[in-house]
Amino acid sequence: MISRAIDALAVALFTAMFACVIAQVFFRYFLGSPLTWSDELGRYLLVWCSFLGWIIAARRRSHLGVSMFAERARPRLRALLALFAALSAMAFAAVLVWYGTRIALRNADVETVALFFGMGVVYAIVPLAAFAVGLHALADARTAVRAFTAARP
Image (cartoon, rainbow, N blue to C red; front, side, top):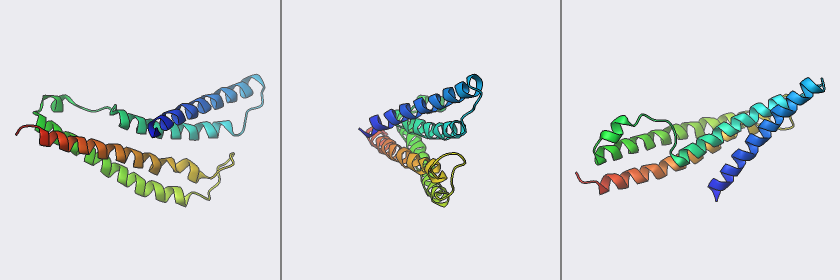
Protein backbone atom coordinates (compact mmCIF):
# COMPACT_ATOMS: atom_id res chain seq x y z
CA MET A 1 0.00 0.00 0.00
CA ILE A 2 2.78 2.44 0.84
CA SER A 3 4.60 1.39 -2.32
CA ARG A 4 1.57 2.23 -4.42
CA ALA A 5 1.26 5.60 -2.69
CA ILE A 6 4.91 6.39 -3.43
CA ASP A 7 4.44 5.34 -7.06
CA ALA A 8 1.31 7.49 -7.36
CA LEU A 9 3.04 10.45 -5.72
CA ALA A 10 5.99 10.13 -8.08
CA VAL A 11 3.67 10.09 -11.10
CA ALA A 12 1.66 13.04 -9.77
CA LEU A 13 4.75 15.12 -9.04
CA PHE A 14 6.29 14.32 -12.42
CA THR A 15 3.03 15.30 -14.12
CA ALA A 16 2.95 18.55 -12.15
CA MET A 17 6.57 19.24 -13.06
CA PHE A 18 5.84 18.62 -16.73
CA ALA A 19 2.78 20.90 -16.53
CA CYS A 20 4.91 23.65 -14.92
CA VAL A 21 7.45 23.50 -17.72
CA ILE A 22 4.78 23.46 -20.44
CA ALA A 23 2.95 26.36 -18.79
CA GLN A 24 6.17 28.35 -18.53
CA VAL A 25 6.97 27.81 -22.21
CA PHE A 26 3.43 28.72 -23.22
CA PHE A 27 3.28 31.88 -21.11
CA ARG A 28 6.77 33.03 -22.04
CA TYR A 29 6.82 32.40 -25.78
CA PHE A 30 3.17 32.60 -26.80
CA LEU A 31 1.76 35.15 -24.37
CA GLY A 32 4.96 37.13 -23.78
CA SER A 33 4.38 37.16 -20.04
CA PRO A 34 6.45 34.52 -18.19
CA LEU A 35 5.23 33.04 -14.94
CA THR A 36 7.30 34.02 -11.92
CA TRP A 37 6.81 30.82 -9.95
CA SER A 38 6.79 27.92 -12.43
CA ASP A 39 10.56 27.68 -12.90
CA GLU A 40 11.17 27.42 -9.17
CA LEU A 41 8.33 24.97 -8.59
CA GLY A 42 9.49 22.79 -11.48
CA ARG A 43 13.00 22.65 -9.99
CA TYR A 44 11.72 21.59 -6.58
CA LEU A 45 9.40 19.00 -8.10
CA LEU A 46 12.37 17.56 -9.98
CA VAL A 47 14.23 17.17 -6.67
CA TRP A 48 11.28 15.38 -5.10
CA CYS A 49 10.80 13.16 -8.18
CA SER A 50 14.47 12.20 -8.08
CA PHE A 51 14.34 11.11 -4.46
CA LEU A 52 11.06 9.25 -4.96
CA GLY A 53 12.74 7.50 -7.88
CA TRP A 54 15.54 6.50 -5.51
CA ILE A 55 12.97 4.87 -3.22
CA ILE A 56 11.32 3.06 -6.13
CA ALA A 57 14.65 1.84 -7.50
CA ALA A 58 15.68 0.59 -4.04
CA ARG A 59 12.39 -1.27 -3.69
CA ARG A 60 12.77 -2.89 -7.11
CA ARG A 61 16.51 -3.47 -6.62
CA SER A 62 17.10 -1.82 -9.98
CA HIS A 63 20.04 0.42 -9.18
CA LEU A 64 23.05 0.08 -11.39
CA GLY A 65 25.72 -2.19 -10.07
CA VAL A 66 28.73 -4.17 -11.13
CA SER A 67 27.56 -7.73 -10.77
CA MET A 68 30.05 -9.66 -12.88
CA PHE A 69 32.05 -10.82 -9.85
CA ALA A 70 28.99 -11.54 -7.71
CA GLU A 71 27.33 -13.59 -10.46
CA ARG A 72 30.40 -15.84 -10.72
CA ALA A 73 30.85 -16.23 -6.98
CA ARG A 74 29.68 -19.17 -4.92
CA PRO A 75 26.35 -18.76 -3.12
CA ARG A 76 27.83 -17.97 0.32
CA LEU A 77 30.18 -15.32 -1.08
CA ARG A 78 27.34 -13.90 -3.16
CA ALA A 79 25.26 -13.63 0.01
CA LEU A 80 28.14 -11.93 1.83
CA LEU A 81 28.50 -9.43 -1.00
CA ALA A 82 24.77 -8.74 -0.91
CA LEU A 83 24.97 -8.26 2.86
CA PHE A 84 27.88 -5.84 2.45
CA ALA A 85 25.93 -3.88 -0.15
CA ALA A 86 22.86 -3.73 2.08
CA LEU A 87 24.87 -2.64 5.11
CA SER A 88 26.60 0.03 3.03
CA ALA A 89 23.24 1.29 1.80
CA MET A 90 21.95 1.36 5.39
CA ALA A 91 24.98 3.36 6.52
CA PHE A 92 24.57 5.85 3.68
CA ALA A 93 20.85 6.15 4.42
CA ALA A 94 21.58 6.76 8.11
CA VAL A 95 23.97 9.58 7.24
CA LEU A 96 21.38 11.15 4.95
CA VAL A 97 18.64 10.82 7.57
CA TRP A 98 20.84 12.55 10.13
CA TYR A 99 22.14 15.39 7.99
CA GLY A 100 18.99 15.70 5.90
CA THR A 101 16.89 16.20 9.02
CA ARG A 102 19.30 18.83 10.29
CA ILE A 103 19.28 20.69 6.97
CA ALA A 104 15.48 20.51 6.64
CA LEU A 105 14.96 21.84 10.16
CA ARG A 106 17.59 24.55 9.73
CA ASN A 107 15.87 25.77 6.55
CA ALA A 108 12.27 25.40 7.71
CA ASP A 109 11.85 29.15 8.15
CA VAL A 110 13.73 30.16 4.99
CA GLU A 111 11.18 31.28 2.44
CA THR A 112 11.33 30.29 -1.19
CA VAL A 113 11.73 33.11 -3.68
CA ALA A 114 8.38 32.87 -5.47
CA LEU A 115 6.36 30.19 -3.68
CA PHE A 116 4.26 29.99 -0.54
CA PHE A 117 6.24 27.40 1.42
CA GLY A 118 9.61 27.26 3.12
CA MET A 119 12.75 25.53 1.95
CA GLY A 120 12.29 22.97 4.72
CA VAL A 121 9.58 21.40 2.56
CA VAL A 122 12.05 21.06 -0.31
CA TYR A 123 14.74 19.51 1.92
CA ALA A 124 12.30 17.24 3.80
CA ILE A 125 12.43 14.63 1.05
CA VAL A 126 16.08 13.86 1.83
CA PRO A 127 15.57 12.24 5.27
CA LEU A 128 12.22 10.75 4.24
CA ALA A 129 13.65 9.03 1.17
CA ALA A 130 16.78 7.95 3.04
CA PHE A 131 14.66 6.38 5.77
CA ALA A 132 12.60 4.48 3.20
CA VAL A 133 15.71 3.30 1.36
CA GLY A 134 17.22 2.26 4.69
CA LEU A 135 14.18 0.07 5.35
CA HIS A 136 14.55 -1.55 1.93
CA ALA A 137 18.25 -2.11 2.62
CA LEU A 138 17.37 -3.69 5.97
CA ALA A 139 15.06 -6.12 4.17
CA ASP A 140 17.83 -6.85 1.67
CA ALA A 141 20.26 -7.52 4.54
CA ARG A 142 17.81 -9.95 6.11
CA THR A 143 17.43 -11.74 2.77
CA ALA A 144 21.22 -11.92 2.40
CA VAL A 145 21.63 -13.41 5.89
CA ARG A 146 19.00 -16.03 5.12
CA ALA A 147 20.72 -16.85 1.82
CA PHE A 148 24.05 -17.17 3.59
CA THR A 149 22.72 -19.54 6.25
CA ALA A 150 20.84 -21.59 3.65
CA ALA A 151 23.87 -22.03 1.35
CA ARG A 152 26.17 -24.95 1.89
CA PRO A 153 29.67 -24.18 3.11
